[in-house]
Length: 198
Length: 198
DNA sequence: AGCGGAAATTTACAGTGGAAACATTGAAGG
DNA sequence: CCTTCAATGTTTCCACTGTAAATTTCCGCT
Image 1 (cartoon, each protein chain N blue to C red):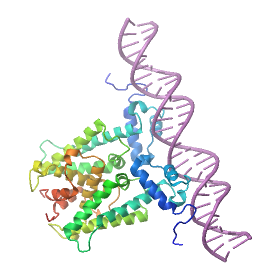
Image 2: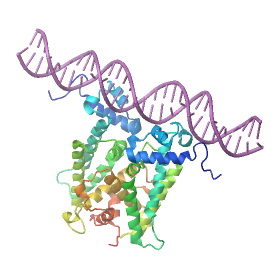
Image 3: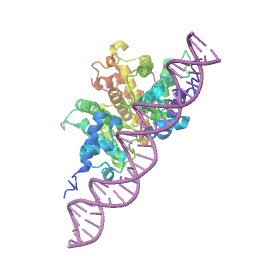
């Protein structure tokens, strides 16, 4: 039983997800197609319809998987008694590492119309990622006001900073001489040093 | 002369750009096609080849236009004697407004493989945007170190924050109760209040 | 044994981008 | 004026894509 190796092919859903992921990172978004995936898996090109419905469904499944892995990357290899600094560092470095290892997938994870963004499973995984970041931001502490008084500003600010950095780097929008020896760990304190006048 | 209304159609390049922009925001990235653009403009579907080469060329031209408009939005309606706060506010609000008014284009502006990202014109416009943000970050001032000593950290950090916020908002990745009455103007000082331990 | 339904295939079709050959037009130069 | 010529568009064709519909295969169940 176990719902494994369900039929003819045996776990075609997983096989398709794997093939799509590999094609995505090898040939980019424009090089990904249902028919290529089907050929790689060794199955007819309409087979995925049973499992994903259509292309948007397949991409949604991939993206959902992506958010799940992203959350894992942020909490990987953490001993239970890790201190504040260690947890922050792991989360930030894990986030950026995921984006750099899966740049095309990462881009797809913020697409507006290729993915059904109101899919319940997807929304749950997105929420899980947000929670991890929210915990980190709570651990960071704030100079002014409690977390409640911040009214979510800190969480929104933190995700904005990390996502922006991740995508600008993977999209090649920073010149190399701007990025020499710079990591996300330098960026966060740099913004903390901003002198605003209000 | 003036290189205007150059041939049969008269300024087909501009017409195509306009049509593509409108289709892009109306139907999203997936709904944009050369043939639809051509039909709107009233021309054969291979006509754009002379002006853009291929689809990537058209998208590159649109994205280049986008960066140019983004830079304009950040400096619009600014009197020459505007003070530091006014300039910062205008730039940040202008940036977010552009993203919200052109969400699909904004997404495309950070695509990895739909656009030829090493196009010289495109790189120049990207650089122009970065300069505007760099100036703003200089105007902000920093608690520690000069701009040079910061070694570009501040510029990288600022663009990361603003881009992240823009895309997360337009991609609908923040829940609405997190965003109630929140604007980019609240986010920047919130990050400045981060208490890091190094 | 045979029924039922899930899983996969076959077939067909409309839409897409691109290449190649051809047609049209305005401008430049004798 | 008339010819060339190059730029601009069109026609035609092709390979590829996603999707729908009808059909077939095969396992589990009674």
